[in-house]
Image (cartoon, rainbow, N blue to C red; front, side, top):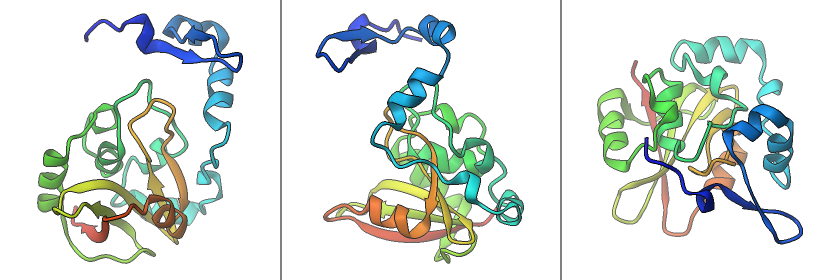
Length: 183
């Protein structure tokens, strides 16, 4: 792992000064200050509202979705593509900044076109005008979806309704396509 510069760990405080989030500070202060910082102005994950029967059905095609829901990666890098792949059981994907090409290859070998928002395992993929994937999330069933909106360290993996994820993820010039996990 490459060394991290102090300026890369610095975060702005309310008074305009900067402080450094060293891993040792997290161990000393606990996660509560970080969770408060992350949750400030962010709509919370609704994973606790998902019925047990939906989680059970989702587990058949998304064995790690429940483990990821409502969590924050240990650092910057993990993105939406890795979150979808990790939820589907790809080892190590939850910790990776997954690039477009490996994600598109995974989609072509592990999904088929189409899908329903009410079913678990429908991968929602937003494509740019050239057809490249630019964002992805996955349905859990029952109208719920797992989403990671960015690769930033403060970006949690949250569960919202499919409708909220679709509305939140819209981008000018991008088109949403659905694909179903094949196992």
